[in-house]
Image (cartoon, rainbow over all chains, first blue to last red; front, top):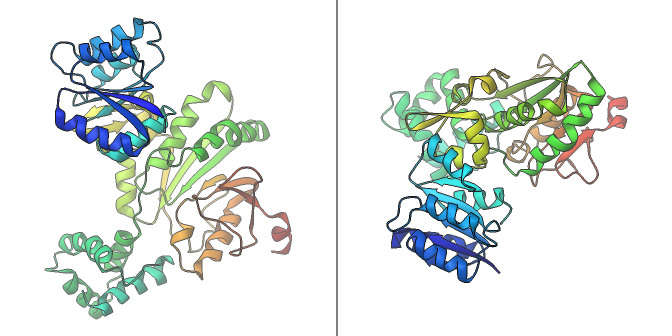
Length: 121
Length: 275
């Protein structure tokens, strides 16, 4: 079973994303900020990361830059999932190594379509 | 809406566009027609159909057909047809045609996601098919759909259905809360209102026709008519692409499936000889 780490400081968003991703056949782990997510990845690299941008302690883009420098950190498919919806943010995310980008609000169709895009569903 | 009203709406769709509308689907019909009634200044859908019975207003009848015809769409819908277009269909035609134009038609283009997906593919492939002249055409039954398509404006929801994020970055700009396709891509497409079951003899000749999720929604009588119309509009060595679950078997001999390429059809040479 493929694993997906859901990183978001909102418990509600994590719960919604978990339900959608479980229906798509993923095993889910959750983290509420970038630092926690990094700890998860160091313990067990997931196949995919669904990543919020604005979070306390360590935000999404900083997490992504750290992740890509970790051993094996180039492997996970990282899909941003954020309210930031301007081209500058999207370009910055892609430059930092994001594979796809979802603008909130999202629904199950959008998540499924983006995961197909990156070859995970 | 009374069952008679729904029956009337279904009949209008069948006679004008060959559309199969189930008069039992009360919620579907009513929810599609309510905005039309509002737009046209009627107090209710019932009032609108009552008026239509009396006056037989042609423009109003078409508005009803357009509202009931509109289907779902997405960028790169089903993905595979676009991958085949990119890796096989377009390179093959580029070789065959040389400097002659390759004409591509999105028949029943809706709000334009299909033809724009093809246009972006062509644009991104320029380096691999130097010298190829590709002409893109799109048609729909609905003037309203064509207007929306031509604007190239999409909501945040629409641009997240099927469109890879790199394509968004490369080809779209933000316009307030909407996203707008670059003029460069928009200008590649020519638009026309076409009823696919009417006489298509002036529609022109095409090398590739994408006509997806139309055949499946037609009345049994109009299905062969659609395929025969498309066969006449397709060049002898061209390709027709249908939607998933749509086939020609038992409908018409005008086309034959291309082996190993699901959804792709070629003209049947035997049928051409007979015609």
